[in-house]
Structures are given as C-alpha cells and as structure tokens.
Length: 263
Length: 167
Image (cartoon, rainbow over all chains, first blue to last red; front, side):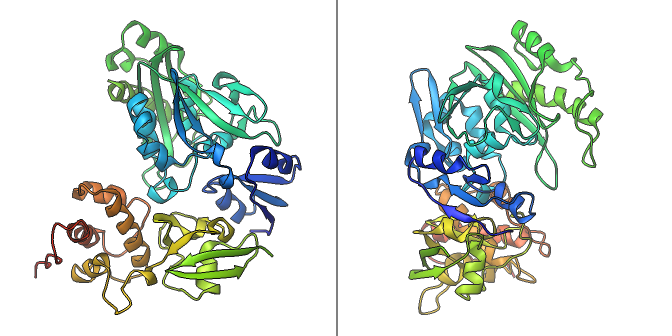
C-alpha cells in the first residue's frame, strides 16, 4: 500500500471540502477500500475518514420511511429493532454480508457508493425504491446504479443517508460462492408503494429489474408464479465460478426463494 | 507522521505511525504483541482478529489511525495477571481445539465476541455460522465448535467450571 495523508473531519462540509481534490478518497468501513489499496489498485494522496461524523450514523423511522445513515455499520443494521420490525428482509440481508468481523466495520454507504456487482444492498435499494441522499441532492435508486462499480455520484459527492419506503412485503435470497462467499446470484423481491419489484444482483455487471417476474408476481404473489420464467443469459457474468447460463438459472431459483422469504 | 493514541490490553500507548500502517502492524511491530497473527493479509482468514471497544475486527483491514482513541484487546490481554486463563482459552485447551495453533488467537477472539453477542446461547449450527470469518486448516473445526459450546456455559454463568471433555 502506498502511503497517504489521513484526515478525520467531524462534519460533512469539512469532508466535502477535502474531497474536492480528485486525488483524495473517502474511507468508511474500509473493508473494500483497504484490500484495494493493498493491491495498489488506487493511489490516493489522502484518505478522509468519515467515522468521526456523528450525523452520518444511525437508523431512524421518519413517517413511512426508514432512514439509514451512510456510515451505519452492517452489524448495527442487522440488529436494529426498528428496521427488523419495518423491513426485516433488509436487516436479514445485512446479517448475511461478509462475516461477523466485516459486519462490525463495513457500512451501507460504503457498499452503495462502491456498487460492486456482487454486493447485496444495491438490489434492496432498487427493489424498495430507495432514495440516496448526498451532500448536495437526492437521487432515486432508479437513477443511481449505472453498472459495474459505477453510480450517479459525481467526483467528490458524498453519500450521507439512504431512505427506504417501508414495503408491505420484501424478501431476499442469494447463492453464495462456496469459497469466497460473494454473491453468485441474488434476488430481492418487494411489494409496496412502488408496486412489485424483482431485482437481480450478482448475476450481471450491475443490478437489474426482472420485468417478466414483476408482472407475474403482480398478478399472483407466490413462488409458483415465477417458477417457469426463464432469465436470458445474455449479458450476464460468466467466469471460473459459474457460467452465464448457470447464473441465469439461479435467477429463477433465487426468485422463488425470495418470495418464500417475503412470505 | 500521524500519532495514534489508544489503549491496548488496558495500557495506554501513543505511537507515531504512517497513514498506511495497519493496526496489526502497529500491534506486532511497534508494540511487539505478536500473538495476533497475519495469515492472509486479505481479511479472509481471521488469524488477526482483535477487539476494538469490544467488537471483533480484522486487524489487517483497519488502519492504525482508525483505531485512534479506541480500546484494543488482543489475545495477550485475555488471561488475568496471575496467569489464569480466560474461559475460552481454557476451553480451547481442554477440548484440544487446535493443532498447529496458527489460527487460534483469532479463533479465540472471534469466539468471545460471538458468545457475548448471544447471551441466550448458541446451537452447534449457530457457532459454525458465527465462525464464518475464521479459517482453520487443521482441525476441521470440530473441536473448536465443542470448545466454544462448552465455554459459553461458563461465560454466561450457567456453569461455574468448564465441562470436562470426554476422554
């Protein structure tokens, strides 16, 4: 790892001022960034540690929405009573990320800003119709995820919170790689104010909605409704862990399990 | 160079580090606490697990500066000053929960956090799931799981002493 300067601001405005320099990167939990820096995949001149900014942390209910601060750690999300009552599928998802030690450090904002194709939260954010709040604007999840490791965030723009409308039902299922435990294919299903949504993560270069399954579940919310729908393998990821055809097959299997998980 | 002030096993320290210095490097190379191991350096194996403010974390994937102001506990900080072992250490010995011992410090630190987070007690399955972040290439985990199951009874006060392992 190349050396860098280190800053630990206590307010969002201080952090954003530091991040105006294009060679400066924010660090949240560091569970993805530090391994990347060890591999010298990036060479920031300075890191801005966001963990000293109290307003970025915590979970609160605000009317019909749950607001999660970007620096809230997976373990806190997993255990939060208000989230477990309102969107239990999201709390369960947090409990299936990484391992306990990664969950004690990694944050929701870090994951959503990184937008790894194998990340979990992007499918929840898109399926639940989340709003991603930054230091300067509000971005709907529909406009936020732009493909592999790419989001609508501008250089220096800081994700501060994620707002989730409380759904009627939501469920998630994923197949993990048996060794790395990264997602091979996951499906998040939700029914709520934004209608029925079925979102696939892990299988393609970014999260995507499965329109045929959404239509089927709108008419009949049951695992059987999606059981005969086949996902095309066009554009899906194929690698040493599994072919695009295998991942396409998993979309149907995980969709059935996600509906069962939602109940 | 940034300076880090932290408490390690109850002792306050103030150390000059580089921005890029990892917590595990601070512990092993500056403080000479070599009980915390580095197995993979890629946050997968868990040999480097320590506690910061009571939470288990992988010390190879935290910068030393990120631990500034924190209270760190390493494997060296578990036994009492008179040498009496922590119940989890005692259980690892009693149940022969190791062979080469390389993963053991991280296993013990993860296991303590795991037991503390589950005051209602854990089944064998839950213990195995809870060890997801720690790899052992010798034991097949079998005796590690047995040791943790036994230690939780003592840590939660349901037994005064460790249940002896079967001969």
